[in-house]
Length: 149
Image (cartoon, rainbow, N blue to C red; front, side):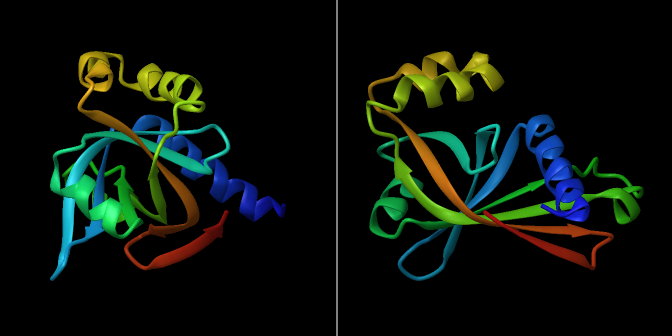
């Protein structure tokens, strides 16, 4: 890995650790569909985790087409964002976590979001995992860099 790639990966990891919410984009029958989700990343950044209820539209859409995108950003909603904000678009395929992987991946999710324990543990909830294919990082509103996983 080149020094520049390591710097980008470190920045992505830092933002992934600091931010709590992401915008999930799924494919609905006639249009894209977006939702806020509480997410967590594995240390190697190859998997992103979130929980949803199986009765939601997002779950239904992901079951019918598992391609999805997550947008994570570090904006503060102030004028300084025009200079300092970084947006990360993560693309990949989403699947419900199998029972064998549930304890390990669930621990990662709950370590970041312990206040969601009850929601996570509900029988109607599903732990979802995005297998990351690519990170697209945008800085200064026009500086775009891609990081393939």
